[in-house]
Structures are given as structure tokens and as C-alpha cells.
Length: 306
Image (cartoon, rainbow, N blue to C red):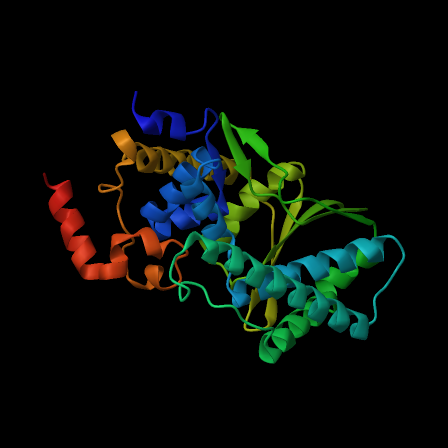
């Protein structure tokens, strides 16, 4: 039996994180969701898991923005409204804690005897703190969110909430669900820039599954410290199209896992299409591209032609 038969889960799983990584680099995708998961009790699997757990200060800043805003909304729903100064203090504290945990992960990672230059420890940077605080304040003052908070009820959902569609477990949980006199609204925060019109419709079609067929999907997208709001109610055709896209994505994931073949052979698992994907890759230390991207791609092309 080929190793990759056991690598792929009995119930295929889809998430934005998985498909985005697959599109950036199939090799990194297989390492993260295949080998690292399957060999989590083996030193090599632990090494991969540790590597993928280390996030950049930039990503951590956005993660803390989400955390602070959702905590703010949750407290607001319970009758406690934070001051702007409390938001600043809370973000600064949480971000410093996240950086501390990151540095501790790096120290643990270095115990594997790898180059100490792979991941650099850092300290909280003032400009990232200011960006994070501004992003939090701008959202809690956004009239669209303020209106939702002042009417009806609002509850927080965990990102681990999933749905099963066509035998595929889909992770695309909204951050908040609002119940008002006009019905149910499903709310999602996008922290890494405005998304395209197509992506707005696609994401909304999945998010609506957490409400009902009449639910409005409200997406807040953060770009250059500004929040952009997109409201949309998908129809049955758009929901079906979104599920068809997921099915095709899962086929691509299956192909990536199956390309490992026997004996954990990664030689024919495609590398990233562009070198830019490699510059911030957490597992470059075990990838041929560390010795030169163009050379690694050329060698792989010759192998795949055999």
C-alpha cells in the first residue's frame, strides 16, 4: 500500500488556509497537511509542526486584531463597552504576549540543531502596534458594525466550527452571527486585504450555510488600515457553484497527496510557481529551493519528464 493512501483523511477537508497554501506551493501543502499530521509523534513530524506554528510579526498583528475585536463585541453583547484606551492597552498586551510565545517557539525549534538564522526572534515593534490599534479602533467605530451592536443580538462563533457538504468537511466559519428584526446576518472579518468580487461571492456562498437561505452575509475587509464592507445574499445557483469549486479543490488536494507515492518520495510533488512564495516559507530548510530556486525547478522538471 502506498504511503499516501493513509495520508489522505477518510473525510476530505477543505479550508481557506489549505487551498491557499496548495495554490502557493503544493510541496508545503503536502508537508503541512500530510507528512506533519501523519507523523506527529515522530521527531520529523514534530519538527514540521513546530516550523508551521511560527508566524511572522505581521501575521500575528492581524491575528490579534481579530481577537481583540471579537472580545470587544462579546463584551459589548454582555453589557460592557470598552474605552478606546482599553482597546489600546489590550492590543498592546496581547501582541506582546504573542511575540513572546513566538520567540519561545523559535527557541524550541532551534533545539533540533538547525541553522539559527532560519527564524529570527524579535520584539514588539511600535509601528505594528499602532497599525493594530488603529485597525481595531476603526472597526469598532464603523457604522455598519455599530448598527449591528445596537440592535438585536450578536454571538461569536469559533473558527473550528465546520459543516459537511457532499462528504467534505468545510471550515469557513463566520466570526459573528447577528439576529435582528430583519433576520439573521452572518459576519466575517478578512484581515489581509480586500478580496476580489468573485472571492466575495464565493466566500459569502459558504458563509451563508451557517445561517439560513435568507441570511445576509456581511464581510469586513481590512486594507491599508481601512475597512471595506461587502453585503451580499447568495442565491441557490451561487451556493451550488461554491460547492462545485470546493469539490474541484479537494481533487487537487488528493492529487497533491497522491504525488508523494511510495516511501515519502517528495521529488515529484510540485514546488512553488514563483520564488516569492519561498521567501517567507516556514519549511524552506527541507526544500531543494534552499540551494537555488531555478535549479530546483529545473531538476524537478527533468524528474517529472522521466
